Amino acid sequence: MKNIVLLTGAGVSAESGLATFRGPYGLWEGHRVEDVATPEAFRRDPGLVHAFYDARRARLETVKPNAAHAALARLDAEWPGELLLVTQNVDDLHERAGSRRLLHMHGELTKGWCLACGERFRWRGPMGEDACCPSCGEQGQVRPDIVWFGEMPYEMERIDDALQACDLFLSIGTSGAVYPAAGFVQTARHCGARTLEINLEPSLGSFMFDESRIGKAGELVPEWVDEVLQSAHSRPISR
Ligand code: BV8
Image (cartoon, rainbow, N blue to C red):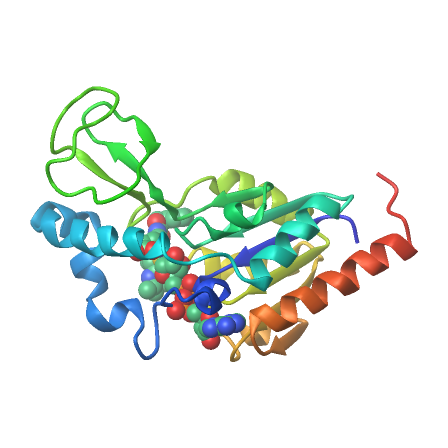
């Protein structure tokens, strides 16, 4: 086993105190997806959409990475083979834990995007409707750099190449309800990879995994990383 692809969802950040989407107190409890996470919603009521993301950006400043993020960062640092961590999460907890071989397929809360000049840039604090683009200075054309429903996720080619070449696909803390992310396990299986999920409950795609470990990511992910790194050290991987 040389090449690993990891997919994370909101469940990996739950133990840090960030709400997941579905289920009690989930993000979708207080808001209808179509009111806050679609380009149409942003055109219709940018104030409501900015308030939704400004609140999440403020909350992000009050939490920190948990043991699952830390274990995945250790794996990133010590895994001798190929590794790609694909996250659906827009929080920055993987980076803050030290993960480097990482991509945000649904964008980042800590980034803005100017619809006037097309520039993307780091953004801290509230954004709001009157934000000025730090690049072109245009006012009121800045949106969160987040992939909304109906929009194409980022780096789909890079993800597909990694899935085609991976020997192991691990999915952590995701319900498997949103595509194309929910279809990655099928691509990985189709290309001969071993597939494993770690989740608090069986996900919608559980039946497609070779193995499902049910429990908290903060407990099961460090255990799994220990296992994998021990196997790598006991059978060195030829590059
Ligand atoms: C697109 C950013 C065109 C915004 C997000 C095929 C079939 C049906 C529908 C579609 C389809 N293809 C496309 C669609 C439409 C749509 C879609 O999937 N709709 C769903 C609702 C049916 N998809 C799109 O619109 C996508 N774009 O398709 O473009 C295209 C065409 C061709 C090829 C490519 C593209 C864009 C979707 C992205 C939208 N943006 N996020 C924001 O964050 O506000 S999606 C957002 O919701 C998240 O990023 C994530 O993807 C999803 C939420 O899911 P999870 O992260 O899994 O969270 P959830 O709460 O559901 O589950 C948490 C899990 O964790 C649970 O299972 C729980 O048990 C577990 N858990 C909880 N605590 C713990 C835990 N596990 C372990 N430990 C714990 N402690």
